[in-house]
Length: 418
Image (cartoon, rainbow, N blue to C red; front, top):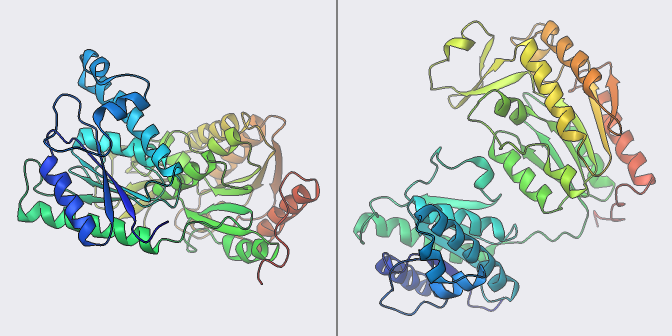
């Protein structure tokens, strides 16, 4: 990268020319340079963007006139998003941009999310949106490292309120490009899913053990967006192997929780041919917003408020059986080896004997269903232990080491610590 970072600024230049030019000014004041991409469809801007709406349409192998002729705003913006994503990726691959800043309402945000997903992890991505942090945005639409800021008071024209959001975003993306440290990928990467140590503990043993073997280890917090980041990286083929031991987001998604990583949880590693060691950590729980009233259907279940944001209820035996079947159904489609480790004495800290969520009948139903539903070539090993017992981590490493010896997992980098 040159000393002057180039930021791709995306917006509808026919309706938001003042905002785009203001962002350009702020980026230049911060020591960067702006490359404006016009993603408008109907009108023409009063300035010359570096990438015009015609360039965007051409990237999608169509024309602006053809997009207009679709006669439907949703179809038109979807096609424009396709072109914007392809053009943005080409600009990045050609070394012409180093980060992206997009702004918009629901239309612009919809497009911006596609552009962010088209760019690799480590490319700074900022979205100024009137629906930032909104439940309208499903988890699967978010790239792993997307940053958002609310475009407050900015629906129509500039003012002191919206300038605050725009200027912060401009400074943030320029600063991020200057200071970001992209993933080196100098060691094979192992992804581990987990929750905090109060619930799941195996990563405390596994992370240093894998690092000693010459691997980079990333632990993902499976509270929705953590699992989304994990799945996004898996889809890119970023992992040499995974230890996907916290599947709570899958249970959440099956049971309608808002704490979800998307319907494709537990699928992208299999599609990408990444070896998977899997365990059903915390699938006995359904996460809820602590501040929301407890739904009537959960009134008779054991309840645990983890903090003022997130709480959990237990999963019924029938729901656990359904989760077990879903796990096996997803894993049997994998294109690389899969080994399930099934702790028969518990799958998260609060389900131990004497703890608030202890439910041996429910867990027994899950164990029974998983053992029946698993199909070759997926391997299953039942372990007479709790998932937080040291023996579980030891068994996971045994599977991992055997796969390294067999060439299924690439060997770690020797002397990686030095």
